[in-house]
Length: 100
Image (cartoon, rainbow, N blue to C red):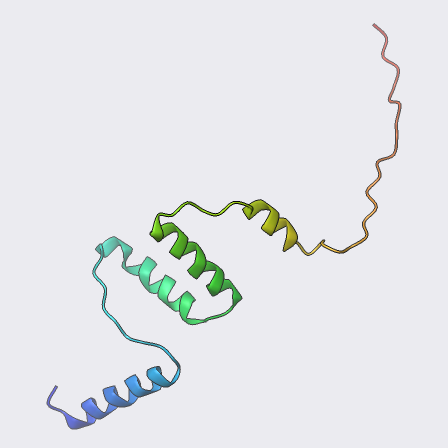
């Protein structure tokens, strides 16, 4: 890489990445996991609500610590139906007469 234009282009590219808050790094893993790791890194780089959820799940899985209790309750509280005044009534039906 003796070409100064190429060196300048790489330096500019890395500066743009740094301004976006993205770091370039190398990891070691199985060749079969290459696409998985790349797609995970791209997804996490979006830094939205879903990527935060993925980040939390991966941290919990990798840490090996047991998950905290109340996960189902927390999921129910995040439901879009929370706060709606729903009236769920089933009509009573005596059914049909069965001859034996």
